[in-house]
Amino acid sequence: MNVGNELEAVELAKGHVPQLPTPLDEKKALSEGAEKELQMHKDGEGEDLPGYGSSHGDGEHYHDTPTAEELITLRRISGAIPWTAYTVAFVELCERFSYYGTIAVFVNFIQQPLPPGSNTGAGFEGQSGALNMGQRASTGLTTFNSFWAYVMPLLGAYMADEHWGRYKTIMVSIGVALVGHVILIISALPPIIVNPTNSIVCFSIGLVIMGMGVGGFKSNISPLIAEQYKQNRLMVKTLTTGERIIMDPTLTVSRIYMYFYMMINVGSLVGSVGMVYAEKYVGFWLSFLLPTIMFLFCPMIMFACRNKYIKSPPTGSVVSRAWKLWIRAMRGRWSINPVRTYRNMHAPDFWDKVKPSTIAPEDRPAWMHFDDEWVDQVRRGLKACSVFLWYPIYWLTYNQMTNNLTSQAATMELRGVPNDILSNLNPLSLVIFIPICDLWIYPLLRKYRIAFTPLKRIAWGFGMGVMAMIWSTVVQYYIYQKNPCGDHANTCDEPAPIIVWVQTGAYVLIAFSEIFASITGLEYAFTKAPTNMRSLVTSVFLFTNAISSAIGQALVSLAEDPLLIWNYGVVAIIAFLGGLGFWLQNRKLDAEEDALNMLPESNYQGKPRDTEEGLH
Image (cartoon, rainbow, N blue to C red; front, top):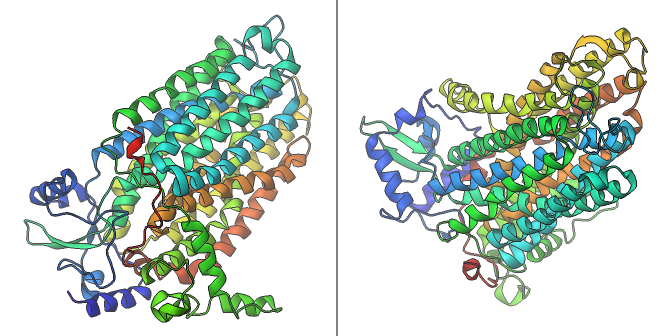
């Protein structure tokens, strides 16, 4: 296929919402011959496939690149997932076990009083607790924890992309997080927990240090797992049945992130459930100790597989050059009229005028060492970041699960179930429904040529979050109606005569919203970012959760009786408006999905610093 045909295919894709017909059982569609060929590629025995992070210059083309017609007519399947990706997923499982197992008991540790005569906080048949600081304080501190843990990915991404590389940054972050875990254990030891002042000081320090490590880990582990899959372009293959198909790397990356997210929630589910019962029957010190022990598996596995992982080296001042590129593109486009400035920024030729090929060599600035393809990738990465601008509103619905819904459960009939066990319905739902979506729902949509593109999935995620908040609003209304103390249920000695399992609907709806919005966000960050800026774009996606936590602090005043109906209702309204705004802004970008995924790879890798090979 010649370059002209490639350009024709890209131009057609710009106006073509991808149609991805696939049978229900994609694994059967891959014949034994195709599976063998994929395994040869994966083991390095076959033809060298271009990998994520590989460079292919302008004009390079392949005989198996699909034509414009084939993009529309051939069905698409995913490739084989390499074994190294599964080891990274297990590392994530251990880390999420440690993180969610630890934070699962935060609300009771902060909000509830130490049981009479206890020096561990274990409630046994009663309510576990420690610091007795109330719901507002627990909501504030857990919200700060979310904020801090999602601010730190920006620092982790900077260190990875510019100085250390992803692997070394992950290992250093693990070490920092371990220090934080140890300090949290100390805050819950019997001699410390009986003195609330000492305990909260120690707890707060541990919270900050753990968040630093968690942030550095989060921004780099998700790009690392997707980088283990080496193919990065559409390829036409012929199965033994004679059928010609397109092997689509975006489908493979999507599946990798689906199961990566499932492993997150396996770790979250087991860690959270186990630690809640450890808190209830032994004490908070055990709830902090066991996750720390599980976390120790992370550095062991990463070190054991260090020579097997595909690792991207740090690339120096790539971020600063992307910033300079945008500043140059904005020359002559500023206006005192903000509407005109916005239109100028979205002009069709905005990026074309700053491509090196359009500037005479003697007129190029000293920092312009990249090629035209890298400019296109920067444009694509910024589009992804603009998509993420709406995510803080989405996360408002998700964050209710980490604090207010736990407190809501304590005001209903528990019948022997710890109030903080209900939140585990969310990871349980994800573990069940992720395989269902991957094996049946998504392939069924592709079979009937329903293009459930990433941006459509995100819009549906907003909708599911809205429905979860409506559900919680209705539940809170009936709690106030039926509680003996009316709209002061949190301070009432008697619970509302409502079984706590009524919260199930909210947790399941939030789970579906995560499948559509959260998983897709990780996928979108990886597939749309320039190769040498993947940690940064991923950290921008994660940072939206920190922004949401900051917004959530403004709603803390509603997180108390008698205003809790307003709390959930306001979040539902904000999320609805946010979802509507998200789709109105991005519906045109949705039609460019194939074109963005088919951009040629750039030869520009930045200015390499010390590579990661030294950390073996």
